Image (cartoon, rainbow, N blue to C red):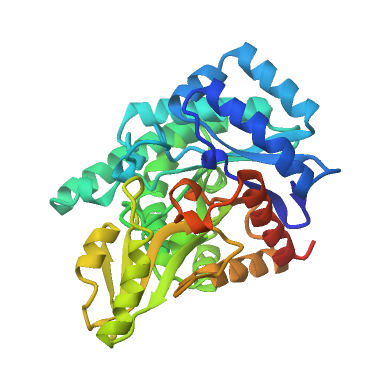
Length: 404
């Protein structure tokens, strides 16, 4: 929906359905009820997630026409898409395969170009579009040596430049401004602001400027502007909270280098201070065990007494080191509901969301905002609610924080 601070919606990766037929049925089932509760009179924006299979089906003209007609009939529109998960995202073990195929693969390139073509066909006139994506690859797939990491980074960057080329062509032919928003996350090849900025400045720009100059016969300044327009940061609040980054500091660094944020993903991690007493710590660890499940990665980043960080690739590894007396705080990747800030003895990083939204309210830094709570199916039973009511409550909380 339109707000004074940018477009706002939720990500449809919450709904199952890897085929377009199945996913469309979910949208038809839930969107009208959600819209009625949060935007009854105004158009309602959708953050669309398409698996590769669904994208192949929706790319067909007859399917696009049918979907556009449904959007018009229901006073809805699509302005952003989640292009991170390529394959199955429900009812299967996802874990690190959420990154597959990574940005070294031509399949990732073809999928992302297809998504942008679909988005260009769906965007309302005059509105820009965004697609969030993987932070190049999963770090543990290329951590054998520095040479391998550099090779993967170079290959992924060259493939991302193929996306930039397509977005420039669409824009120059009179199409919409669209951007690919890179989403750092723990154990991604880019997992924090320092790694993202370093990649942008020292890999993307040096490779991208001559690439665009050669393709379009433009000067260096124009090529630089295009790269900054079409490749942006996806600020996933959960992910940045997991690596203990302060939102103001991140945005200050981005601004210092003239880099843009394309989308804010509104999401919260689990957190807890870790007591030194064994019996009290056991209570905390038992609470985290309630959230252990086999579908998604739940990386844990622990802060120690000296301020350093310990990275655990998933919750079981963290639990195995649960009584480490050097550890003073845990944060775990879970995308818990944003309208709650406590889960019995555990807390969430919701205060980071409030901080980010206050910055957005005072001086908008991203055109798009998307609630991304996708773990409803794997939450403990006591926290599950009916889908439309849950999503609506998320969006109403965001509207309250933004004060509109």
